[in-house]
Image (tube, rainbow, N blue to C red; front, top):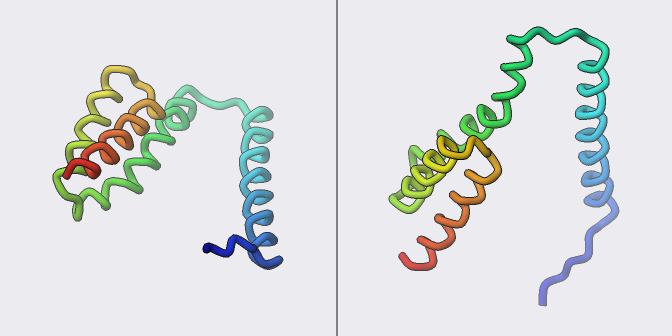
Length: 103
């Protein structure tokens, strides 16, 4: 049986990370609401989530196999057709899980 008891230090670290994440996001929104943002900066902020995902997953593809490359192709097609990052990622996840179950 798995022991799911979390010690106080683990809980404190999790709560601390949640607070820091919230403060960072809320602080960024607060600053952006008080500053005039140029169209160029706004365009950069719009593509930031996709760029972060690519920067994290891109290097992983170098060591990936055919299952992961197939899933990335699906992600690319879904992203180009729908322009929805979340839908593309969920599609890729479904493909990886499905192919790993078969292969």
